[in-house]
Image (cartoon, rainbow, N blue to C red; front, side, top):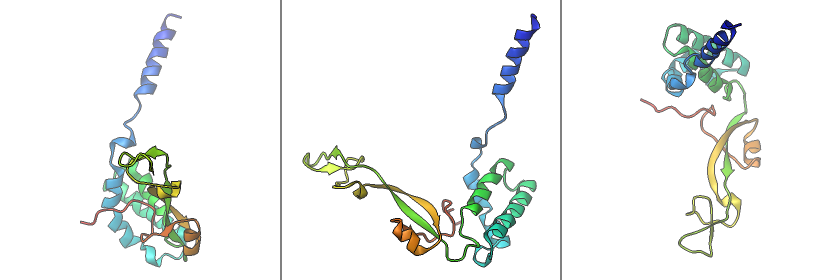
Length: 164
């Protein structure tokens, strides 16, 4: 009986120690570093089927991880980017849909004026307070604009990578 509490304590220590988390690796930088290699082997503009495109990226990604070009814990980031693309989806577009804040904060310059949360942008309705955008895949450009968005220029909803 005396050894059970010691074992239980040891088990807790082992479980809480755990492996190093993926957050310690900059997977966005790794994804950007291999972007050209993926584009060369899986060209988006000639993809005729989205599933085949994503599968092609998976094969290239696995080889890059096996070769040590990207950390194994970054394979998911590469794959998510391929899945969040319009490659192999004829007619589909990336759509930048605005995200709105709220009016209600008094402006410091004119106390009678209502402002967005940033306390500097005057507004009369919440749609005046654009705080960012969210990328979505839409089946048509008309569907994008009908949702209040604007058609994006990139074939993916992933963040753009800096060009060297």
